[in-house]
Image (cartoon, one colour):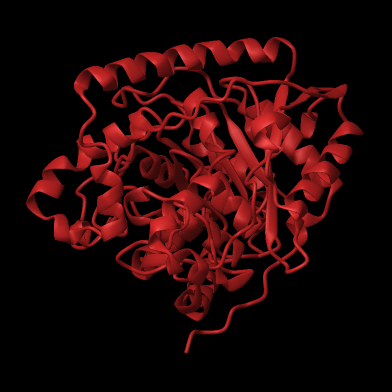
Length: 463
């Protein structure tokens, strides 16, 4: 799993490697390691091999679709896949097979990607630990006793463990970036509306984002290029041209002005997270025009998410509440009493907040924070006190959630490991639609460090 997506594509075209061979290797690795990690709910072996054979034939005759052609990827299991189970990790949808692909899946298929299957998550994406769900907890490849984060825990864990070369996750409060940080990989939440969410089971449509998880910044850039773009059938989609993100990396970030909002984002940090963040800022300072502390008004209200989640689930809850995990049901019910007027007011405030954050980038070019204030807790520790589970998850998502409210592009890149060997992440964000700038600085930092080169140990099968 050391080759980049671009390197693999070159090997395909030179016929020194076959997409079928690579897909078989990934499927074998899934068979070996997934029983311990629980990263996949459904493995689509037959269709993946069929797609790989098709890619091999197309590339052989010169019909190359681009850098994802023949590359094995997977998607979070709340993203619709035609003819393949799409469960959202819930008993409610355990037999649900959509008739159409989500727009993001259609774009992956158009790019020639090989879809390995559907990845485990926190039930209905309503949590940051991926320990609550019909198919069981996702385990962190760096230490099976610890959480992988959530809600895209299976996607981040799969990429970390080498069960594919990338994944598509969703992010409503940090559900791409937080598990990416805890699993030592790269996760990008694009600008709100950059990637279509049509065909994705929603958590809160005003805050939901779809984006890539991969081993390196370059791989994330390549995947983003394939999935970004206007979708006229998605009300949240915006017709803003996407960039050649992989090419932009090679141009470098230039001398950027880096803003560090220490108030809120750097409060109550785990000491090892604080040290890793300071070390990362020293690396960035060597390539930036300046690094300065700034003050940001940080929105923390969660009522819009609660109300929109309840609106989607209300009919299901009324008919079959027993099909939800108790903790998920409790979270859904928290939005029951918010009125339509409350929701309208919150949506108006959200739009105001997204307009106001633009002013911050008159004085700085990017924002840098720790991705999470703390490192991955153990699964047993989280589950020991169910009444504290949500509060513990909210701490993990504290630094990522504001960027969903602002709708800004934000990425998490590995920035160190604890003494116990658990990964930590650095979050970089920029102005709306400036994914290229965010990726450029993330790539420059990645190339100046070696955290992304580390690999987790192969976990043993559980007893």
